[in-house]
Length: 161
Image 1 (cartoon, helix red, strand yellow):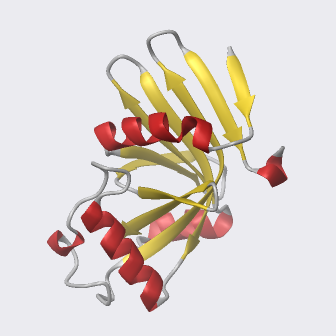
Image 2 (cartoon, rainbow, N blue to C red; image 1 turned 90 degrees about the horizontal axis):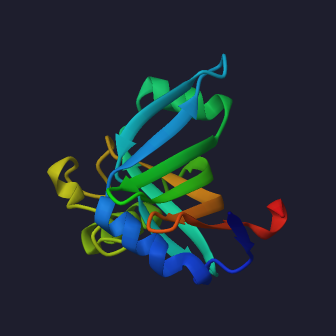
């Protein structure tokens, strides 16, 4: 049974634990004919004003860019053995401001949450590298499921309730 909660902080520690342990998320977008496409990526997450905010350092591929231009809604799924899981529904937008790119670079280096992230220098030369693109992920729904007893808690952004 799922329980709806209004405070992200109530599930934040489990959210962080699963994401930090799994690291890789399956990201889903849809094409112009509403067909899903998945890819495995490593976003980082932070709590900003009591809400989860994600960032994805990525290449701006034609498929990903076209999908998000047509429908910016995306979903991320994390699963680990034992069936602990986190599902995040978000709205993605490109964020190319230099201060945002530096912030995201630093979050990846520090790992956020702990364990999630990596040295972006393995793929890009610096936050100013023109091949580096950043997606801002404004989460509007987060579900955390504990595999031990299938306890499910769902946080939804205030404007979505």
